[in-house]
Image 1 (cartoon, rainbow, N blue to C red):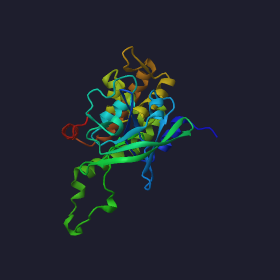
Image 2 (cartoon, rainbow, N blue to C red; image 1 turned 45 degrees about the vertical axis):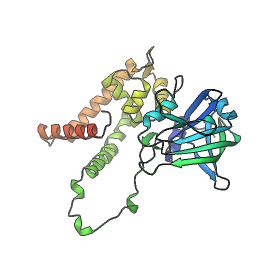
Image 3 (cartoon, one colour; image 1 turned 90 degrees about the vertical axis):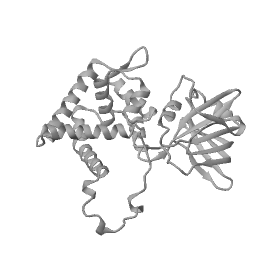
Image 4 (cartoon, one colour; image 1 turned 90 degrees about the horizontal axis):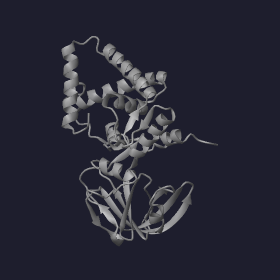
Length: 308
């Protein structure tokens, strides 16, 4: 049975994972690669595993490494994840590191470190499965780890069933006035109502975000585009591959992603559809109310440090 690679990746993306950077050393050179395939294997002895694409530039360095370090990234380290997911640059430039077991680099500020001795390397289709024996480990209690789910970065939060409910009498309808609740309900309603309409123009929600952002902001380098659409680099590249195959995007000489003429025409149709949807959604509100909603949300986003 054959699978569509992008669709198979989307199915796998339903399983939420952490995000790590696995580092190794070859001679005087440090190597690092972003990986979400990290998992525990055994408590006695303490074994973990991860897998690396056989097409990776640093494959031999990891295949032959005596030691490696799994750096579990914190939720504020999205830029580090994107950096180590790319090729063709000094990934460690500007990254705070310290020396770990066997001289292997450890990323400072990570949520956890697992310093390992290579236990065994196994064939795994188009990947190698690397099992390591944990020799040393450390973690920090403050903050939380970065999560990867549905092709995007996410952050962990307590499950509602585990939260302290408190006194029911103290609610007094406060939930309906709570900003986070209102934003979450509005976003869920918007997605369930608007996103299915994208199918009429042959795009999904990930493609919609990329096409409309490029139409609005012009050509973007991949790392900026990944940040603005909140997608990890590898998944962004999958989406861009699909758009490229359909002749909707291309790349400039300086590596910027740009819309083709067909992509520009489609993006303008998507924006027109979004404008019409917004107009009908707000038709019972006064212009001043609409302006207040948008400016207020803009200030919340700015306060939280997210890109607009």
